[in-house]
Length: 217
Image (cartoon, rainbow, N blue to C red; front, side, top):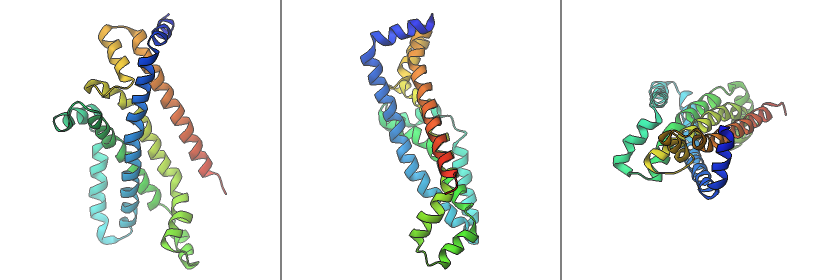
């Protein structure tokens, strides 16, 4: 019965629902894109620095710092940014970036650091340039591990983007908060079901990519 009520409510509020879905997709794609660029680059650099004995202490401290960020609730980060950026999309996006960067960075560092040194030495012996070594050896071997971090970050961002409704940044969380406020499970489901669907689709796609890149060429 609740699902029937939810479908009726969604049908009668199609415009608001479509707008909320678009806002939610923006709240996912913008922070996730920035996190992939920043976390991927810093993680790759950390993997390179970790091969230098003198830099290992700094790498451990840096990785521990980003690992520590993962225990901070995203809602806490969101409210800490309100005095700086106000009740805006930028505040929500930045909070979600802080949430998404650590798993991507840590997975990237592990992925590139665990590329067998013997394989890299063979590539260098064959006369590969650093960029050829990166694209033809390091990147393909590290990619399955990197995608695991991207998957974790994606699922966390999809779920945490619902919190943006608390600062008026929109998204599907607006239906969830409204459902809680009015004690109407049907309204809550209008927001929760699409979020769950996005998470399942994202997980399925990223699992498929992981399996694809793990196949022997």
